[in-house]
Length: 412
Ligand SMILES: Cc1cc2nc3c(=O)[nH]c(=O)nc-3n(C[C@H](O)[C@H](O)[C@H](O)COP(=O)(O)OP(=O)(O)OC[C@H]3O[C@@H](n4cnc5c(N)ncnc54)[C@H](O)[C@@H]3O)c2cc1C
Image (cartoon, rainbow, N blue to C red):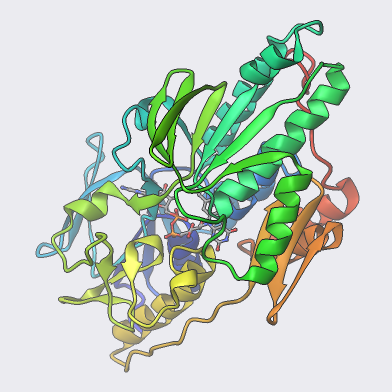
């Protein structure tokens, strides 16, 4: 084993961080990240609702890694594959590598819809969740108790664009939080949370068993679902939708865009072989096609035999990280590289603040028990045993009750 070989990993998400943790001690490992924290995105909805805290799902890298991994905080702007060098933004210089692992993940895809990037909120990280929670609280704070129900409904309309798992998880969470705030603040009428989906059904990638739980939860949380509906424009406080060739404009307190993922801009710049969607084509060993010493994984990589439902998921990036780490070690040791069939480990969907749905071993179940099971499942997926232990103790002893949307100034 060549422990002096320089392995540079760009991106500290599910792909990059877990690769770094497995490689620690086996080479001179550097983790490059444009954020100081790892984000466990599947629990971001619970962070929005206050069921979990920032330190549970977004620990700093320094809490997770030891001196066997060098951490460099900065944004990589260029990769020179010929010179084996990566360059960082803001005059932070460049780094040479022997082996490179690219795991920079995706970005929100606004699909060139007019006004979408300027006026809608993305939902990918802690800051996005903080901004959305603040927007919901401010909108509630502007409602006087005697406002007529129809005006209340107009002032408290939130649109979630995209009816995939993210749209469903987010809209049910938002609706439960807003409905709870209505009761606490004794407001008249009700809030309105819309999901806007181009296709003919929500969660199109999921089977009918789990969809049944999803549709029931949307109904219980009073989320309004608009299928076969396209967003044509987003304004400062409105969204224009089109259904059956008819357009209508709806006033909104916020539009949240979870309608798709595109590859990271760094990948767009990389001159390597890609699919039509811009994903980097990788071999079954996770190496990119023309460079044996460069690996790509996670949301930016396309592996041939992966089930479509697995693509773009944390569970795939996680499984790929283990193969990539094993193969980096093999490459450095001059051994044969391995391949692996990636498995679907089941599905878990958060559905509001009281329930969830799980598909495991081909069986779907939902309700409050599924919510607990989802927490247990995700505890086991958090990085490092030390962090897992701290978080599970906190959830066990402190509970995971949501934090209500109290008026600003009354919040802890
Ligand atoms: C809200 C939300 C909920 C989700 N829920 C689920 C779920 O329940 N189950 C599931 O399986 N999947 C879920 N996903 C998808 C899952 O999070 C991704 O598939 C997974 O994170 C992909 O891992 P990755 O390593 O490719 O990218 P990421 O985890 O996104 O990590 C990429 C990292 O690279 C860093 N980076 C980017 N560009 C640069 C640069 N130029 N220089 C340095 N660093 C850079 C980023 O800051 C980030 O830390 C969810 C995604 C979101 C947004």
